[in-house]
Every structure is written in structure tokens, then in C-alpha cells.
Image (cartoon, rainbow, N blue to C red; front, side, top):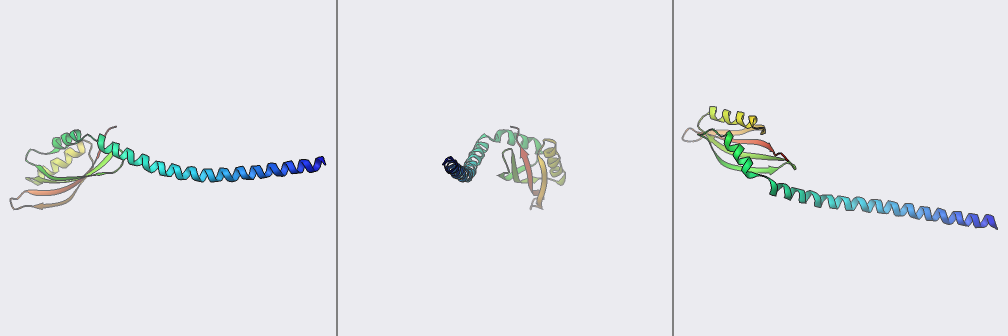
Length: 140
């Protein structure tokens, strides 16, 4: 009789273990789903904070430092790359190719990365209009 009771106890323990393992797997899957959902919310909130905390004054001051006196910006389009980097495309009017090259060199000196001249054309006054792409990394 003791053998039967022991076997019944072991069988019950086995069933309890299997039930617990099944529940553990189910909870593990659920945890991953919740974590994934929460990560999307966290990423969205961080993105909003990044956009709100970005110092346009610092950025525009640095950009102004780069511009030769005779050059001016026509338009600018920012794109958030990640939590610390923003990609900017802007159109700038320069009197000469020398002014454009001076702008590119100053952008590099002030730690703007990957400045690229995408397009350039001369307007009716002989001024050079260029579209420039550059990445700005803010210090956190």
C-alpha cells in the first residue's frame, strides 16, 4: 500500500511540475509581449523628450557661426536619427564656391558630421544655391 501511495504522490508531483512549467512558458510569452509593447511606449516617450529638449538656440548659433557673412539659409528640414543625432537638410545661398567651401569647412570644424552638398545651381544673379545635408550630434 505504501508503494501505491508513493506512486500516487509522485504522479501528482509530476503533474504539478508539468502544470508549473506550462504556466512558466505561458507567462514568459506574455512577459515578452508586454515588454515589447512597453518598449514601444518608452521609445515614443523618449522621442518626445528628445524633440522637446533639443536646443534650437545652440544649434542655430553654431550654424550661424559657420555661415560666411555673404551667405544665408533659404530653408531647413530636420529629421531625428536617434536620441542624440539629428539629420538636417538645408538650402543655402552663397556668393561664390569659395563661400560654400568655407561653410563646409566650418561645419566640419564645429563637429557637424558628414556634410554633403546634394545639389547646387546658379541663380539669375550668379549666386550659388546649394542643398546641404549634415548630421548634428548634441551633447547629452
